[in-house]
Image (cartoon, rainbow, N blue to C red; front, side):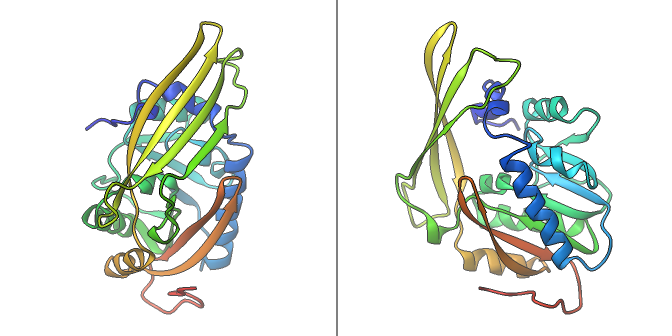
Amino acid sequence: MSPKERLYSDLSWLWPMWGDPAGEYADYVQQVIAWIGKYGRRKYRTVLDLGCGGGKCSFTLKDHYEVMGLDLSPDMLARCQELNPGLATVCADMRSFDLKREFDIILVNDAISYITTEGDLRQVLDNCFRHLEDDGLAILTPDICQEEFIQNETNVFHSIPHPDHPDTQVVYITINYDPDPADNKYECLFLYVIRSPEGLRVERDLHHLGVFSLSTWQRCIRESGFDYHLEEYTGEEGKYRTLILFKTGGSHGSHDNDQ
């Protein structure tokens, strides 16, 4: 199975210029580390960066933990290795991977947004549960829940300088559209306006993403055996709900908080 989205295949060279790993991604990871300190019950050493993509979260995580990155796209894993030389990586599907080991922490950033059915969501959650040590934490940050979805929402981002493409500037445009609000899927059209010494060109890239209600997230999390706490992260691109999942049989301070 290969990624259909061009950003993760023939246009993966655009990814290093979209978002600074030492800036906005580092800010998010520092918040993740703070949540680990807040909810953790012991010392944590190992992290699985699930759906690691080009490795921008791993870039900061590896300064604090022993990190392994897993992604479905060989092209993105190559970008991850360029950014994080020597980082252990695995090419696999987050729904079906079997690493035959457990981790203290599993981080699933926006890659979870490519899960479009409840059945697949349960597979990912069950797989996280199997790959976590006791008292481990899984931290998931979906792009959006149904409650916040805005039809035709459009966002514009600008490239950051990159030494491999010093004379190239890119405008990244994303447009969200839900053709059937009754299901758990929506479309995000990515447009890349690329200006380089060769001239101006526009590339089109359609992504099919999942959007679940918060109650669906909560039910699937419980069915997979987790307790959880709901947090919120505010980054450069807006506010995101984050779910902190606990693999524990006992009570945990403020778990199962639906605020």
